[in-house]
Length: 345
Length: 274
Image (tube, rainbow over all chains, first blue to last red; front, side):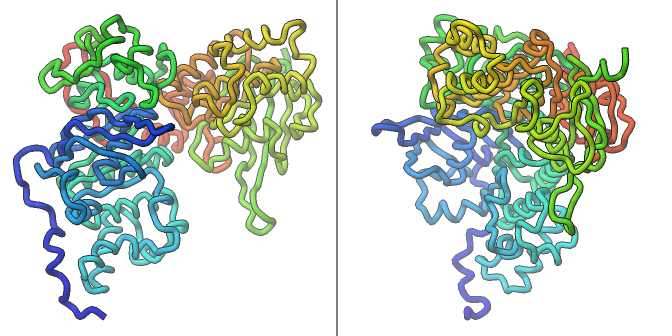
């Protein structure tokens, strides 16, 4: 019913925001996320996390269950769980999204910042053809239908879906796992985002499909100058696509820095243990000496350094004093009191 | 020594189809493999390759359409119809310990149940002490005995699953993605535990995994499955360093390693680009 050309003024902010500063595209500054716990308590699932995502850079966010990595990504996307309280700052081109009004946050979310998930079946609507879902953002821009369809085909082609004109009419369940993942990536790209959040994007995929999806993400990232925050438990994935890494444990940052340096010469005993536990594929590696115990949970975070009960280097200070994240070498940040003593660092 | 003396598990020309008569699709399309006593055979492949179907036939959870599964020359039928000694001899550890243990049962009652089912393996004398010894073997504190399975961590659950399997003194352990669902740091613990137990209890293992790195660490031989067939089989080191079949090569090409280690001088560049 809407006449062509009407209602386009609202969408002035649809394109990428002009860079306000030369700083990072996203700066997470002292982010705290608290969830309601039992008996009226609050649990800090993210406890003072800070790191930057520079422009056109892939940052890998590594952690095990309970590390807060997914919660951090969801906070950035503005999708915290029910009842969560957030504090700190999420600086998007220097503008604090946590302080921004809801309309502004909605304008950023799904457009300037888009997300792809581990399970495309859960992220895609099973009752809608994928063309409808990928076309959602172009349609919101009130593009004519032919133009929306053209854009959908272009996006599907871009992410390597063969025969896009035919496939766009498929429902999610009619596609293979790899194609569904590609359709979801197309949907994320529809708003021409400047930052892509990818939460375990290849974890559920077979290894041959995984390597193709990672290559696709790397290609898109390079071609569009996208920034990407890749959340993963898999150090191998992060080591191949991340330029920088952030390692989290029990809701806090343990270590961050250039990916190659961090994974080759860890400055935190937890990172060192993770790296040692990754077996090589093409050579036979000895079984690693495993860390004792299970990952600490935010609800049950040990005093002092949360990692101390599992740490081979722990001593009195570690049990008493929460370590600050400090710069231990140029560009290298570690939250270990004894970072300089980590073997191989 | 004859072939049958050296073979513990023998699978011959196994075939399994899913679906009706018309739409039947072969999940396993003529698979033969064998495992010698105290040997670990790694079975690798992508989802849909049929590796889990083979495991389920060996465990007796699925009846094959054709072919035979034998243990020391004796046929292994459906799990419930096996003679007790064969039931005990082949035990299985699954990917998701949370769904293979009743969350409302205590660890003590889970173990008591298997001892009740297989009285010949039940300890003589003080069962509590025997239970604590078994748990200690798995790296679990005695307190765990009183806890419900649903209150345990993923790693603890998997240790209890392994305890339940070993409580009846098996000779072959079938591990279907037994470490895949665990956190990285816990995965290393369970692998170490399995390898320790394998040596101490002289176990053979059929170790099914999609993770070539893990299989390279613990398997003596490896069989690669693709679309219901074994496309390559051999010594682990040979198959994973000099694959002969195109599919094995494709799997290896796609498998990620951590970035190549840096040379001693620390000056290397040229990060691998995916």
